[in-house]
Image 1 (tube, rainbow, N blue to C red):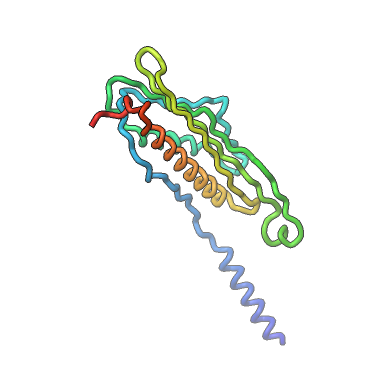
Image 2: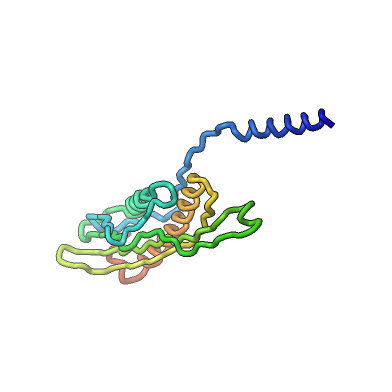
Length: 194
C-alpha cells in the first residue's frame, strides 16, 4: 500500500514538473491579406482618424491600438494611387471596443470553466470621400461590427488572438462592402479606364 502511494506521488510530481516547464509564447500576428487591391483614379490618399470616436481601451491586459495600425496597413495596401484628378480621404469615423454583456457562471461551471464570460463588441465605421480640387464629390459610408466572447481565465495571449480574429473578420466584411460599393456606376469616375 505504501509503495503504491509513493508511485502515485511520484507520478503526480512528474506531471507537476512537466506542467511547470516554461514554453515561450509568441504572438503570431494574423494578417488579412486576401483582399482585392483596387487601383483608383486618384493622385492623393489620406487616412483621417476621428479622435473623439476612437475608443480602444486597454482593459484586456494589453494595448489594443495595434488594431489602428492594422487598419492603416489595410487602407495603404488596398488602394493604389494611379490618377491625376481626384483625392481620397479614408475617414475612420468610429472605431471602438466595448463590453456588451457580462455573464457570471455559478456552481460547477464557475469552478471548472471560468467565473465570467464577457461579450465584447468591436465597431468600425469608415467613409471614403472623393474630392476634386474644389469640393467633395462622392462618399461611401460603411458601418460594421462584430461580437465575440472572452472568458476571464484566458491568458493575455489568448485574448489578443481572439481580438485579432474578430478584427480580421470585421475588416473582411468591410472590405467586401467597399468592393461592392465601388462597382456601382456612380463611382466609375474613380476607377482607371482600362
